[in-house]
Image 1: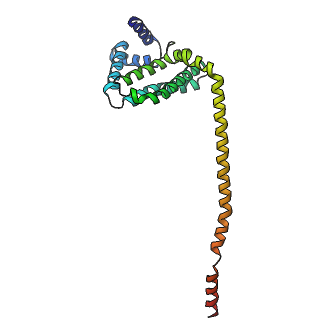
Image 2 (image 1 turned 45 degrees about the vertical axis):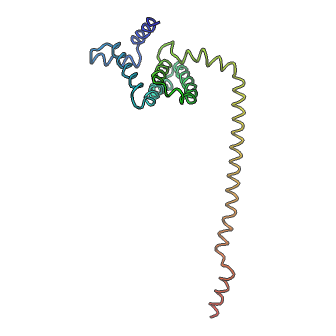
Image 3 (image 1 turned 120 degrees about the vertical axis):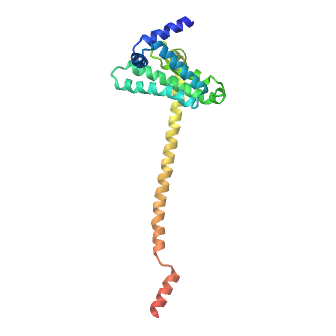
Length: 209
């Protein structure tokens, strides 16, 4: 298993992508091979995720910045295959984030939690055919969705209908309140402008004197 993983890592380092291009530039300037640079970067990041402050922020940045950048490039490119690739990643990332929201309070206390999370996200975004998002979507998300698609569509349709009804009801109430206030305000203003009977009597008395 270790030999197979090593073979995959070496194959990845020999491919042309954003990470290998960056490592190649550092290799040209320093003379250190890409393999050792990758091992050093992974080791430093792993140690920081275990002992460093702000490990959660770093982990979320790793899982968001790189995919977001390449998602924008995919949108702007005429090729639609990369659109599907990154849409698949964001579906898996969204499901993982929802699950993490409920389990984070328990998993947070494990010392290697953020290391595991970071490795999982890196696996999901890895620019290889066996990346995690493709595997999880094909084997888990897609079969589950196809089995329950009709029920999900029904729930979404009901929720949309209820949301529209609630929005219309709130809009009617707001408009009714605005119209009612508009009718009351001029009458109140006119009432304030008219003098009271006592004031009228005092004014007449002053004039007669």
